[in-house]
Image (tube, rainbow over all chains, first blue to last red; front, side, top):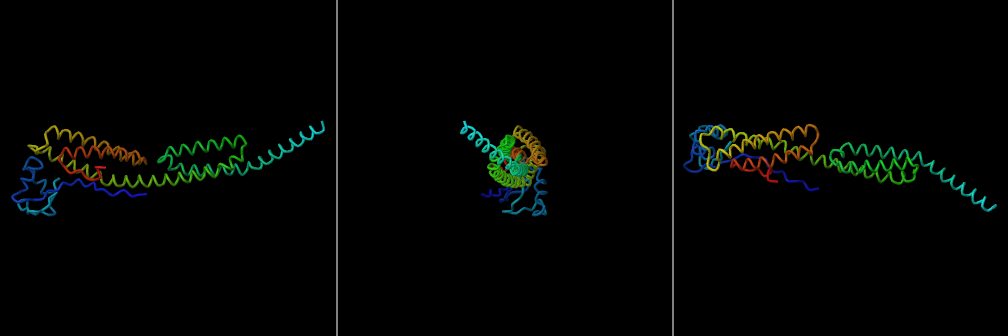
Length: 63
Length: 199
C-alpha cells in the first residue's frame, strides 16, 4: 500500500512588501479599496506594531 | 432370481451405509455452518458499509451453503465451509483497511477544509465592504463567489453530517464536491488554490 502524500489545505494569501508600498496601497491592490487596510493590519498584528511602518521584504497575510 | 435378490440386498445395504454416513456428517456440517455464519456476521459489520458488493457476495455464498445443508448435502457443506470462512476473513481484513483509509482521508479533509472555507468567507466579507472592487473582480464575480460560498457551506455541512452518521464514503464524496467548488471560488477571488484542492 502506498501512502498518499499529505497535501496542504492552506489557502492563506501572502504579499511580499516591495519598495514604496503602504498598507493602504496593498489593500487597494487586493480589495480595490485602500480604506480597508486595517483588515490587513489586524491579520498581521504578530509582525506589525504600527500600520504606517512596514518593511521591504516583509511577508504579510492578506485575509 | 436368487442373484437378483442378492443385488437388491446389496443395493439396500450400500444405500443404508451412505445414508448412515450422511447422517453422521450432519452434526459437523451444522457446526461448520454455524462457524461460517459467525465469520460472515463479523465480516459484514464493516464490509456492508465499506465493501457492500463483497458483503453481498458473502450473503449469497452463505445462502447457497444453507441450501445445501437443508437438502442434506452435508459433505458439500463440510467441503465449502472453510473456503467461505477464509473468504469472510479476507473481506473483513479488506473492509478494515478500507475503513482505515477512509478515516484518514476524512481526518485530513475535516481538519483542512474549514480553513479554506474560512479564508473564502473572510475575503468575501471584506470585498463586500469595499467601495470599489479590485482589478479582475467584478460585482458579478463577487456575486458568484457569494453564491459559491453558500453552496460550499451547505455541502460541507452535509458532508459533516454524513461523517457523524458513520457514512465516511458518503462524507468524502460530498467533501470532494466541496473541494471542486472551493477551488472554483478561490480562483474567482484571485486567491491561491491549495495543493489539496487540486487533486
